[in-house]
View 1: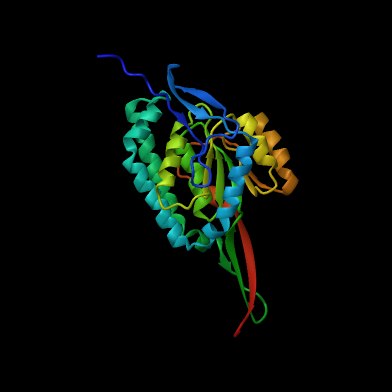
View 2: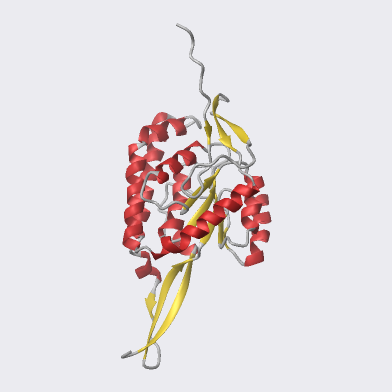
Length: 284
């Protein structure tokens, strides 16, 4: 019996609900914790960033127009499908150096995190909104609205960390362009496959693999990006991106020490929300 020829997979990008190759044709090698070859990942370019932002912008208005209850249902469906791929995610996390039990625990925690945020979809408005007392014959309401398109530099916690930064952005009606963890992009790519086969509309989440230092500045300076989560950027890159983001007054969440196993709270949801205040005459 002859030895089989190994098929070395090249993972693609996830943009607009499809899986295109990088327009540059570039890729980079992904190795496991021991230095063994795992796969090739597409190395996204500036053009891919632009394409992802266009897809996110196109999807944002109809996504925000869905009822919060429906968005919660869709996020819960994503959690169900993550659960169905538990063993695949476990294997991909083990390749990063985690022990089997630790990898399974992270997958379970990521599923739980998606469920947790799904439950907030129809509750965040009650927590962040208000009926304001005014002197006069008016109703005065403050309600949260999504910021728009949010760029995310994902942390190296390739599954739980990614779930913890992505779910709060989309649950409130934003759309996202994600730069995946550079050394371990496979869980992010597999998450893209989950999203593509769930009920999430194409373009709500777009996932780019490649070099952070190359992609993050283009995302930060893009004039059609409204918010920027720099969790996965180092201090030097974060400072560069924050300066670029000031050009169109993006909302910026700077990197900080994060314990992904801790109670996430509501900070990541409220960071990328705007507050709209409406006055309405009584009796009209």
